[in-house]
Length: 334
Image 1 (tube, rainbow, N blue to C red):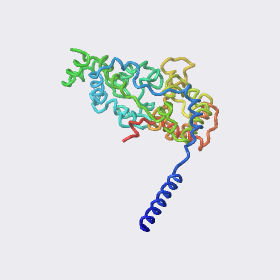
Image 2 (cartoon, one colour):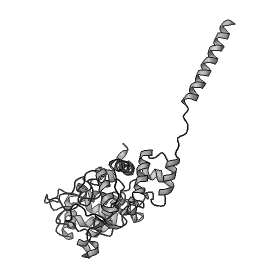
Image 3 (cartoon, rainbow, N blue to C red):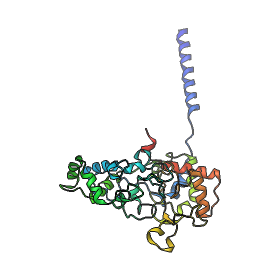
Image 4 (tube, rainbow, N blue to C red):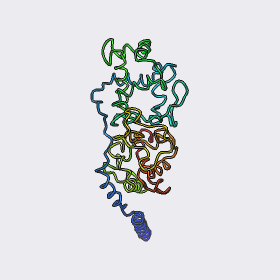
């Protein structure tokens, strides 16, 4: 009897300890009111990256497969050792992380190679907008003497015809006797239209208030407060307009006159396509000439040159933290 009483008392004590421990371990719910407030502010300005690029509804599996092979095809360069992937490396978020890339002549070009990821969402292609879409863009580097340096489209077609396996691939994708330059660029564009990334900022925009940290949300708040949204808005946070580089103060190097070199119009001097900010942390160095290595330094410079805003090092670090939420999950998840 006495033993039973002791066991009952011990059981009650253990139960009380468990209950007390449960109460002590229970945490109050996290206050997400600040995150909710900022989300409400930004929803009209930004958008989630769509799942499909414009035009992709017409792409077939055969064309995408062919386009991927052509994207890595070195026969489309005059030295047979360079492909599109050389400068727009799929494994490196679509860039080579160099200030500017060398052509087959080994000489660095004048402009930084932008990422191919999400490029089909941009309103034009290239820094100066000289191509209207991915099809036109795909053919440019192949025939550019400073890049892949194939002398003309007929040579490019001949090089592809000389590789026997392409006949079947083109027939499946476009029909018989279909190896021509138009179909080469169309297939490459079809592949590039598959290169869509989604990220934690997308999740935040969808309503997941814990998708990004409070510090990152503070960076987003600063991004709004410093008027960065003047040019960086929409699903790409940019890539939907031209803007003068050096709107308030001139950029450090005025050698490249931007869109003026395409149009010859005085008002287009130093005008460039506003960069998209998706994957921006992964695709440096920055500016059209790759002239700045640090994302934080770029942020401070942009505030000063474009917006007449003084951005401190601490503020730049928070804005950069926010920008890193747009690193594509395909690059951040193993």
